[in-house]
Length: 230
Image (cartoon, one colour):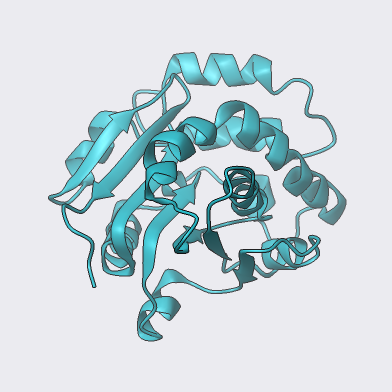
């Protein structure tokens, strides 16, 4: 745990991984993220104050995977009777296919794309988010994602990721025992070993970004703009 396992590979990222187990992994992500990722609190503190019943707030979810977070955020906004539109992007065709098979949810769309594609198209969003993406990136890739996020976000960018520590590894080792027949447990433990510590993120982050530990499992790398961009 002292050093980041940057060369470790998650099985679900392999192009020839078991498609049945991959499908089950995408389905189980919804349970894992609701229970452990901390997005209910992030929604309440970071997103809900920006939302209103009169105007639509746009959110870009980078690396949206099977789409569970985008759908969850839209559901919370609908219950609060405020307007939210979430665009989920992922370059992996398998993730995009899974997300595309979801029942249509008002205010949610999915694209197979990179953040750089949206920049070339001149897109802008009120908020840019990601969940469990940063640990997949090497430092130079992380810098590019943060640069893209700064350019795409009018108000703020929120990158929620795993936090490497012995406690996180031990807790997830036990917490993930019920998730069988998927890559959740094995890949989750690999992900923790691949993740950054808060100190490592703080050292890598450009000016304006803040590394914020949130729980034994998670941390937030956030950019909050003083004034909304046009």
